[in-house]
Image (cartoon, rainbow, N blue to C red):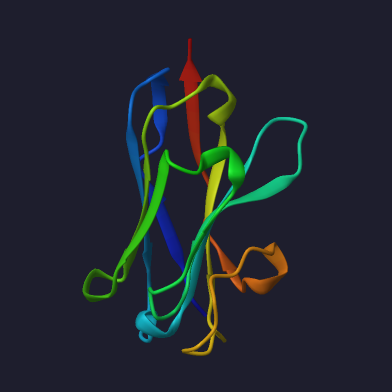
Length: 128
């Protein structure tokens, strides 16, 4: 069982930056593939960014490329989503997720059914 605790959401203005954090409980964090998803009101949950177990592969949704950066700190069992140049359309609940069965050579995972455990979600609201 892995528990994920998210932090860093809030109310910000368009053009601002935020950094979301997700800290995992338990051992073996360095073996996990990691992802960030978001769900806007009335919409499906979609992938935002992902990073592979090795850290060498990342994935970004087209809508966030160049503005969002995913990273991981295995020593702290924490991964991050740096969000720059926020737009009103970035308003959503953001979820972190981990894939505990990732193999070392695999690429970043972009499908939500690749992930085994999820955080509780953190609200990001961007005002114009």
